[in-house]
Image 1 (cartoon, one colour):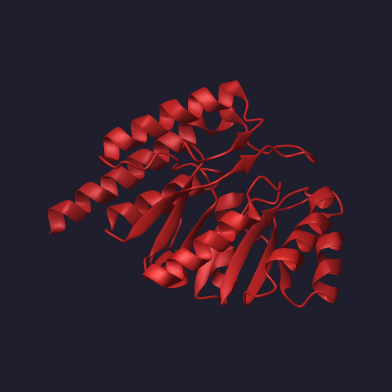
Image 2 (cartoon, helix red, strand yellow):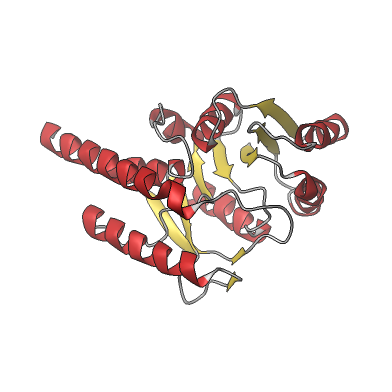
Length: 237
C-alpha cells in the first residue's frame, strides 16, 4: 500500500481539489492519504475532517510538535503503507509524477525515488526568479559537499520505502529543512535511489509558508549535521 503524507497549515482552499485529484487518478492504487494538520488557524481541520468522513482513503491527525519536521515525523509514525510519498498541499506537485514514483520504486525494488524539477524534461511554471537563483546556488553547494549528482535536494516531493524512512528517525529538522535532511541521510547511509524528471506549478490558492530569510540558517545547519553524519559513517567502515 502507498501512504501519501500531506502536511497542511491553512490550506482550506485546496483540500477538496486534492480529494478530487486523488479520486480521479489513484483509484487503481491501494493508498491512504494522511492530512497532518500543523496548527492551522482557519477551517482546514474541519474541512479535512469532513473529507475523512466521506472518503475512507483519507485520514487526519493533529501535529503535536509545530513545524514541518514534527508533521512529517508524526505522519511517518501513523503511516500504514509499504511506501511513503510526501506531497505538498499547495497543489504544486503533479499527480502523474506520483504514479511514476510508485511504479518505479516497486518495479526496481529501490529504497527511494527522487524527483528533479531541473532537468531538460521537467516543466516548471511560475517559479520566482529569486527563489530559483537561491535554489540553484544552494543545491549546487550541496552537490559539491556530498559529491553527488542529484540537483533538487530541497524539494519535498519524493517517495521512500517506509522501512527506510523509519530507519532515518528521529528527524532533527523543525521546518522546511526536513526535506533536505531526509535525502541527505538516505544518501549518507548508502541506500539506493533513482532520479526522474518531475513537473512543478506554483500555487494558485492560499499563502506560501516558505520564508527564505527565516530558513537560510536552518538549511545550513542541516547540511552540516548530515555531512558530519556522513563523515562518522565513513570512519566506522
